[in-house]
Image 1 (spheres, protein in one colour):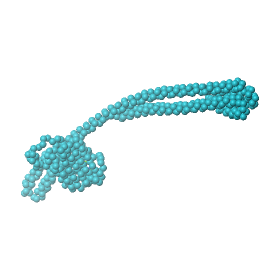
Image 2: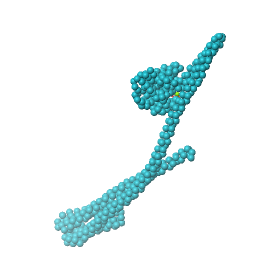
Image 3: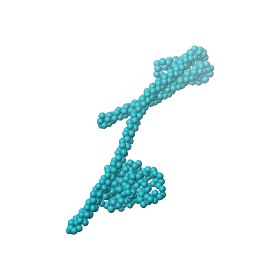
Image 4: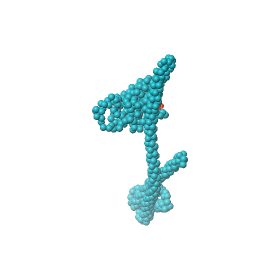
Length: 471
Ligand SMILES: Nc1ncnc2c1ncn2[C@@H]1O[C@H](COP(=O)(O)OP(=O)(O)O)[C@@H](O)[C@H]1O
Ligand SMILES: [Mg+2]
């Protein structure tokens, strides 16, 4: 499969996974929300139903109680009215009875309308009975004292009391039905609660299974992604390491190539040019008897050859300064600084006095090449008037700072190979390179290289013997 096809496949798979996850979580959340809404609405409905039922029950109970007590009272008034010998008191009782009757009438019209047929018929019976009861009382209200005395007891005993008992009996039945209804409704409430509980339990179980499935799928997905990431990381680390090895090999090869070219230039070209110089010298001597112009031309050729020899030597030195091996790093850097200073006019100050006696070959080459490229950049880009180069060695590391007062640049700058090469050289020895620069602020490059542990400490006599060398 091509890389493009592979990428498309991966994107499609990722999209499918995302959609599946979004769907799963969406369903789970919707279930959760629906369940919550349902439970809350059922509970609040039950609560309000419960309150209504209770209030209705209490209202009915209160009205029935009031009715009952009014009936009892009316019975008492009837009795007082019928059996009272004192006419004034009898009249008082009669008025009280009339009032009690009026109250009973108004109460019976208030007794509630029942939603169910049984309740309605019971209330109708109660109403009928109450009306009968008050109609029973009607005739006595107009009786005189004699009639009351004569008929009173019998009327009370035969008409009022049975009627009153049956009325109260119906009221009691209604009260007990009322109680029963309350119990039934309580029972229904409990049933509704238990069905809600069952529904909630089923919903929770479904959600739990959904969540479990989702968690499982997500965990598998994450583990797979983790595995892929680890594999990619391994690949990238491997590739980076390979790249590092490659660039180290490149630097090595470049260095060897330069060494070879430098040797060829110095040995082959330099020697044959020296031979030409000797020949020219001999030719000059042999031409002594000949006219002046001829000798002058030979002298000019000799000067040209001399300057060519110097150029070749400089080239050879730049490619691979033999003084790096012969005189050490500080001397080679000084020579390099002089060369640059002379050709560009930039003032270069080198501080490399406290370098250790011995530096590893690759450290010397690395520092020399980095300084070489940094000075090269100063000449090409910085328009600087002065450069300070400082080398400081501590026990386990050596640091090199090249600071110019030129126009600076915005870091990080990519594009050129010079800076990359500098980074790679420092990196290949386990060191680091930092470029600090701002437009208008000059540039400072700091290299820090770790030094390998020194061999055994040198004996004083050997150190004094090496004292004449620069490093
Ligand atoms: N000392 C400096 N002063 C100003 N600009 C610099 C300096 N050193 C580097 N630069 C900037 O950084 C860029 C990259 O440098 P480098 O990697 O050596 O590539 P090159 O020298 O081939 O352009 C340069 O083109 C230049 O713009
Ligand atoms: Mg450069």
